[in-house]
Length: 297
Image (cartoon, rainbow, N blue to C red):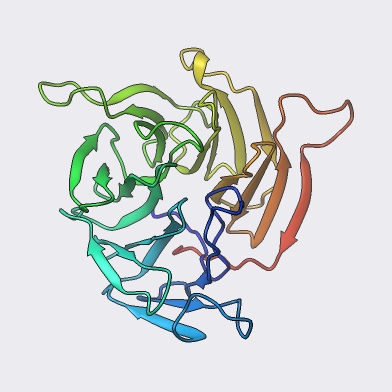
């Protein structure tokens, strides 16, 4: 299934805020839109855009995912038109590159590695792409899922070689691009069916910076925390419930202590995902209402 995410909101920052990280303009895109609307939130004090609001055109299909590079110097957009475009987030926000070759079907997610050197894409063609961010050239086409790949996540602050993905086949898979492909060998180093041990589609994944824990959301409306060191047991560390419909997005806070989730139920929820929580304390801390969602995205 195509994950039902909503991007009519300010994009999240993929890196810690410090004096060395360029300040980003606020970026939003309407659901099912083929264009990006970039809004300079620093106006009138003076921002990085040539105009207060810019409309970025280039895609010919609905835009499904946006991702700022941790360096703050680039923005990637993934679309139903099978392409991923790279944009400058400053000046006139020029489209300076197209990742090549394209997926064979819609691109549903795109993420940068923490060092901004590579991009990882997830597609409806059951494949993942691993691209060089400088040249835009695909370095690996990763196969292993038996269904649409809905989500991908690379760890914060770690190397650019490992990441996780979630698919309609009900599996979360761990990948290492150092593993040679061909002759039946795949870059999958571990996989597990973690949503109630069923074929329930996985629609969102998040990965801790130390690559020890993964968070998985899907059609079952729960968030499952998995210890990646014990993938063979397929026993989750814990499950968190509270959403009333499919979970479509997961994002860890920079310190890794909080998890933000989004669902088709129109809510965003904040969860305490520290290793230990006080007795009697609930992991769900806050609920933010008003985030739009629908059966298409």
